[in-house]
Image (cartoon, rainbow, N blue to C red; front, side):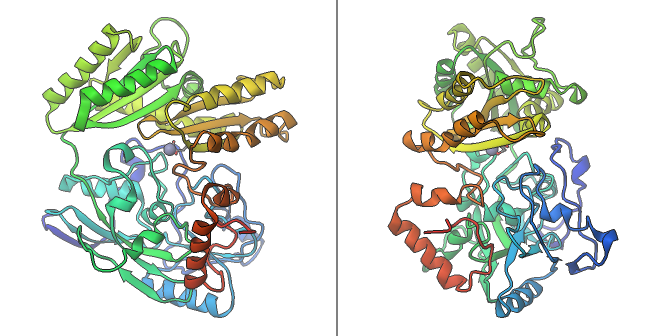
Length: 504
Ligand SMILES: O=C(O)CC[C@@H](O)C(=O)O
Ligand SMILES: [Zn+2]
């Protein structure tokens, strides 16, 4: 592509061959040309399943008459106007990769899929400003930008399926957050269709614009309750010329905290990711023999995971030799000072990808273990891992059978650099949760609140956590949020029963 200003192009990359694609299933591309998917007989029974259920099998729409698949903003507006006039409820849906049930109907809502709106509208290679439709798949956008020397400012395990409109609607965080920050900063503009079909053109491509309220911000993270995002304008960062990836093993969480400080000090502005994997999480991923992954720090010990903690460190900079030297110097200092027990720096891209897989595939590996209670929380580093230990201890004290082979597994991992912990508790799928498990998992989020954390760091509220909104925000704040909902969607047709608690 020779032009600086690309226009109306479909991302050409095949995500399944783009490398590093996760095993999170791709949502099927909708049948070309059709604007509506609706079962018309028994043969069509499973037609809507990819839209009405999520990949973790936790959320399932009891009844969904149809999936709407518009191709243009005008069609989205027309469909919403139609639904608004008839009081039909609508669930906007991107790649259906969310983890809190935000994109799955609760009753008989229709689904409005943005998958067919997947065109790149423009890209300015000098400023790095991308404008595209909401249904573009994240990984395809990233691959499309690479030849221009740019990347997407966010990266998630679900990149092969998730769509940029869904990312923005849920204010998704992910693996590059530490470096490029929140979508509240990267998104420059949005086009949004309101419940009654009015189109809000806020598709600015300016980095600076102090005229009036920055209205687009209220739609970022609103989970489709205030309007449907149809187009997105983004500031995308230059692709780093040099990337280093290291994995270190540590003997205690106290050492992890020391390493966080040391890494920040030694790597400074080139530090781009700092992820935590505990031994239990490492065991689960390496234990999937068919995946052929190995812990590079396992040595000859025979154990999958000789250390209780691992940190994945990544730098993104512009000088290969300089960045490598910095990473090696960090490891040397950390080893000499007894902060880490062992460490390795990836020698090439393949090794770097292998290390990243050990982290990115944890949610997929846990899904194979059973039904997973997922907790996505922010906690001060002083309380960070205590939550995992406390959960494990409480289950053990309650006599719950733990470990592999049908037991309950508790793993802790996440975006350490952002103080974002993912605590996953898997239970065997076949049986309902033992009462002791239910009791312990019900105590997790109250504990997080007691320790001044957030009950949803990056996954949103959806159905799963909507009850927590009034517990984490004041009455006045929730009141203003409700007022905005009333003003923009007075009939409450958009994503009903999500985000807002039933009784607030
Ligand atoms: O499944 C989870 O609990 C976390 C998923 C995702 O946010 C991740 O960081 O891998
Ligand atoms: Zn995450």
